[in-house]
Image 1 (tube, rainbow, N blue to C red):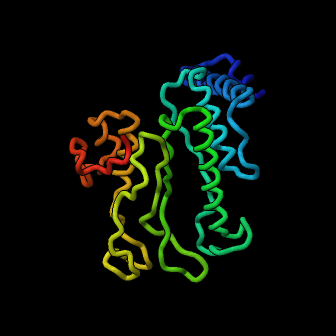
Image 2: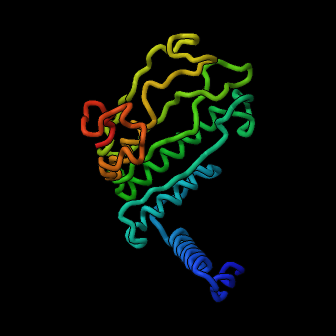
Image 3: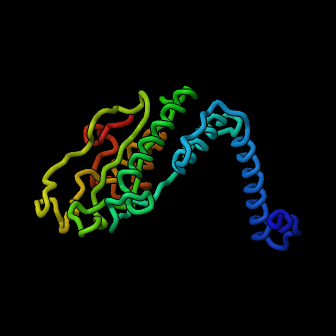
Length: 234
């Protein structure tokens, strides 16, 4: 392949040498991961027709092979789009803003992932959480909703998650209420910094490094005072 031929080209500068080494590692790692994904596995097949479930199946296989990969800590990202429903929010087609169908896909895919983690015996070692760029307005624009501020997220895990609780509060969420900045864009009562802090803490990020990662964290909590923290993860 062209990339491999390019890497074989005699480097004429330190930058070219560094590029060649990085590209070579990328090819090697790609071959390794491809082999693991194609290898026999106890991970069950994903529900058909779901891109999200397929992504989660690949993640499960990487978790299954963490020792072979030499990983002591793994972080994976997967994504699903189609929630930017400025219009067509209530549609009959999956490609026409069918919000309910997309949420059902999220539900089914996470149920599949949870069951798979049970097969792997990894429920207490894997924490799954959601993230998004923005929420939606509560006020309709006629056929959907526009970009908002506050949104809802959830965390899924085993004994490490203090679950079946709602963290944060629902203050005045009435349209034109005290928390509404206009068009149903509510001021969040819980900062994303506080949410992310919980995940970072579970990943064993030192408390001394938290202000570097989250420069505004001090506005919302004290890293040394659990009473000021959400406390959703053990």
